[in-house]
Length: 381
Image (tube, rainbow, N blue to C red; front, side):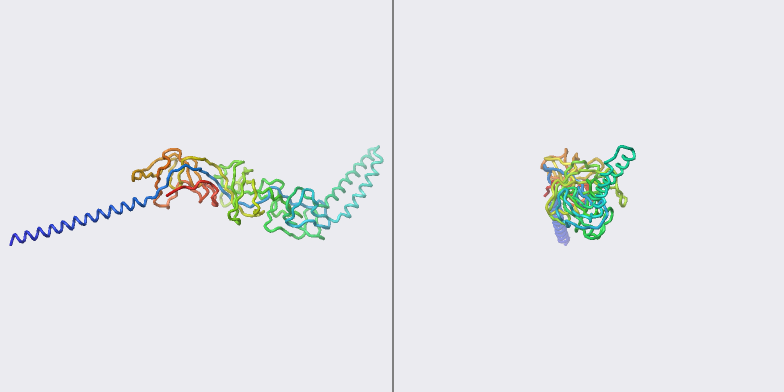
């Protein structure tokens, strides 16, 4: 009886041992499988050679670098308008004319008086009479000349702010007939003979072959700008259309809006696509720094604290933190000067909730939001 009891106990204990061992094996296999899955889920980006480009951006309105608001220099009734909005004109072409009968009569009378005064200049009184007659004649001649408007340069008529039969002269105009989307003159400062939009001469003309854009850049971005830097210009209404330009003027004084300090910067077009129109909204990206054929890495995988930049490298299946020396911080890539080799696999961050080095909005490092003007997208796996 005692032998049977002992044998039963041994059987039970052996069975329990087998079950415990089997559970341990299953648990170990399960943990190992999870670890393998975690290792397989590690995503990396490769260190490669590329061009790293940094740019800053702003928006503005397309305007002519040379525009004028033209008025009659004399007062009178509009007799003839020779052009319409959109017409191409040449330098010296007559655009509009006043009824000049009265001005011409005054000129004829002044010319006769001058002829009489020329007959006798032997005394001081006679000489004074001659000077008066000469000045009167010159004023009458200017009045006749002022009854016509001539184009000061070749360009396009962008607005006509008067009608035939209306009264016109210095500062007065009739009803307005403006071109759609007209941006008369160069917006902002830095224009060459430009008139601000809405200045309203009797006739406004602009040189549409010389376009520019005045964008406002933040005080941090403007410190990276220099006259002569190249720019790429995109247009809100023209998908896929871009123009080239360059920085031609940086205003030394700032404007402040909603406690944001900004500086107006003039970007002159170096090429003008046929589709571009005055008054269109555009976004400009200015290349402020660029290096070619350098080791580069996606900016999103670099963590920066103060002046210290680190990445996590995958080596022999292990994740190893490595300190790197960063160079040019571009729109999407960062130059790596030391700490990594070409082909190294750098682990992507597990989460994207924290802000990584290389901030700024997509496509434009450090600048305002908008299009991707810089080069060099980050390769990854």
